[in-house]
Length: 347
Image (tube, rainbow, N blue to C red; front, side, top):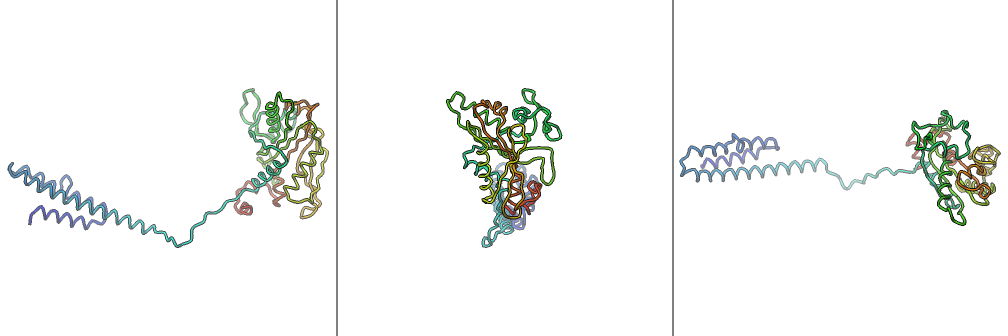
């Protein structure tokens, strides 16, 4: 038998016995490597007479091509076998029921926030949003808070270790009332020069920050402020607006609302707003919900308006508090612990 044919058959047999890519590459090296049998045949051409080299070289090239074809076929067969094994290992039974992902839900505070906005929008209020890092003037001074007011102290307020461009102290806002100032001033500028200015009618929900933490207080909590300024807005409008909101929010009419005289630097007169259910577990208990009052003339002036012409009311309430009442939650901290056992009740 032709020695080159024998070499081809030996290579094909050895390639066929290779079970993986590593063993196949080892077999390849024995035939086609730098010291392989085919390479040695090529080197032997140097000892042949010139007239024999051409014919012998052509025979060796044909043998080399046959071995390379056998190598490629075996390489493809091994790759195909590996692919089939992988597909078999990762086989999916398409007759099994699908895996349904868990469906999320809205956080109870988010539910209350959305509901509150919807109710006030139906009353004609705009919704305003603004920065949570405020300057001292907007957070305190513009709202008629005196320099020695306790809320300015480090015990109640988170101050930021920086100042704004005018050198004012910066802080995490202690209430959403600064948005009353920002929105009112922007409103006045927008309609400057007009014969008549549309009423300022806005709510401002958002996160607020104070140094406090227990079952009914959190260093971060949620408030919503309301402001209605026009030429003829009274405390009667405040009572009707807030009472209507409470009945819509809690979806019940058996609610009594009372206004207790109080003091806030940004309103005069001022009143605490209390609510009582006439039925249910909380029947007969007055619950404090909000602070309110007629906007102080100094604050109206800081809005850029004439307090002799414009009048109105403001109120501020805790979104967390009314959410606790709506869902019967006794500990404020449950809102922020991310306990799925608690949150899944609202999904």
